[in-house]
Amino acid sequence: MNQLESFLHRAEALLARVEALLPPAAPREPDFKRGYAFRWRRRQGVNGGAHYLQPVAHASSIRLQDLQHIGRQKEQIEQNTRQFVTKRPANNVLLTGARGTGKSSLIKACLNDFASQGLRLIEVDKADLADLPDIVDLVAGRPERFVIFCDDLSFEEGEAGYKALKVALDGSVAAQSDNVLIYATSNRRHLMPEKMSDNAGYKHADDGDLHPGETVEEKISLSERFGLWLSFYPFKQDDYLDIVAHWLRSFGCGDEQVAAARLEALQWALGRGSRSGRVAWQFAKDYAGKLPQALPMQGQGDA
Image 1 (cartoon, rainbow, N blue to C red):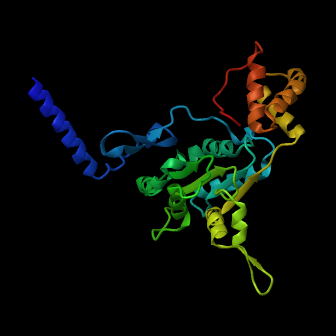
Image 2 (cartoon, one colour; image 1 turned 180 degrees about the vertical axis):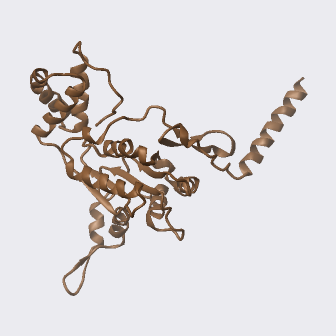
Image 3 (cartoon, rainbow, N blue to C red; image 1 turned 45 degrees about the horizontal axis):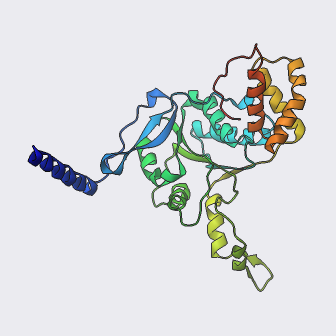
């Protein structure tokens, strides 16, 4: 019996070494009828983990009309997405600015408003950006229109995903697939950390112009590959209260209850050091949830 166990142990070890030498398994064809939102996932196991598209069972139901006081940004991304789903030229989009102001929610809302026209969304973690060519190949030629969604994007020095995204946007010998765009959000405008030492790279030309050095050029080159930039700013107090009122009404609160909640909403924001849409949404859930007539949540997700 001991000899059999020893043989099986050696056989398993040999198989593990052979599997490590085999090429990764090709991504299997996803079932695009199972939903309109997907996540790029890695299944641990043979060949270091096969990648696949996982349908999102319960996607956020937030709509464009739910997003308040970002009218200009909403109009621009809605127009760009409409061009994309109608097979007209459209740009990759970078949404940057203050946290909790609706950057991610705006992308989710676009999906919900345009899903019936063939729009699909694939969420990709920063750690998996090196797989972008595989994802594009997987969906190329399909009739749907795909937005690859990279949330809270930023890079540190030397991260591999930076180069992969740069190539996917506009740096490969292969043409970009006409049914794929990249929508990314970030708190950083240039996606890379900026240091005081970078300023030493600036050079003065004879005509007085100031030219950035190679380090600065590298750090801004990724952002420049996005054709459309949308900037988001902290909300004023009245804007914040308007957003609170919108979400409270969505939970069934009347005008008197909305008015009565104003002071608590301001105290809530003060305690968190932010008057963002996310904070307004969190307050509305807390306040309305304590009321007996509150409506059930519909899965909007953070605003």
